[in-house]
Length: 182
Image 1 (cartoon, rainbow, N blue to C red):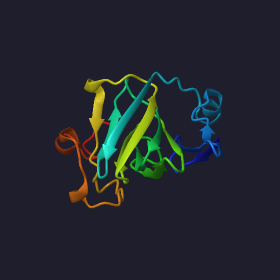
Image 2 (image 1 turned 90 degrees about the vertical axis):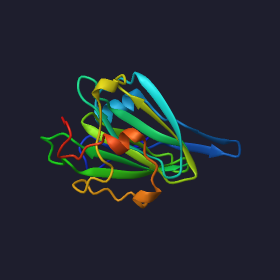
Image 3 (image 1 turned 45 degrees about the vertical axis):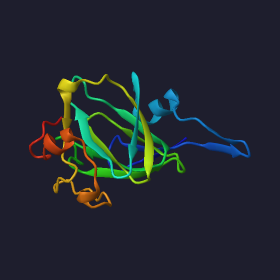
Image 4 (image 1 turned 90 degrees about the horizontal axis):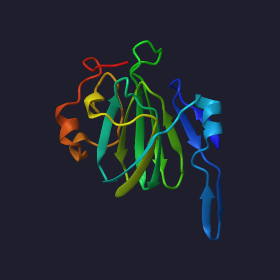
């Protein structure tokens, strides 16, 4: 696996080694010792998967301590624009984001540490998105930041009128200035 440091401390782009032949391909998607070598010790406790259609934007989500989560995300089928936003108030990159196109073709992954909000936009007709987390889901600790917050300035690549958001993301997401952060 090739670990590529992003512009944000702690967030890594991971490119697996893919072994392809006439039968298909094989790749390692996770090896604890390699992840530990680059990001430190992470103990994943849950795997999640979602299927979404073009224009679905999920995020920007995070959980407050003691239920904060690190995530290792990837696309099994389709294409998404995956975004992580640094919401650690004492971080030199606070409020900045990294955006990575994850596809079933490029097989890239993104490691997102605790203290980041996360979201993705489906660019293909549909996408299957999977991720590992290192802490359980806690609805009482879940928060959301507006996908269109001008202080963050994410270029999603689609008009807001084309986006499909959950009611929760439409109605309860806060601006970064209003959000409870780390």
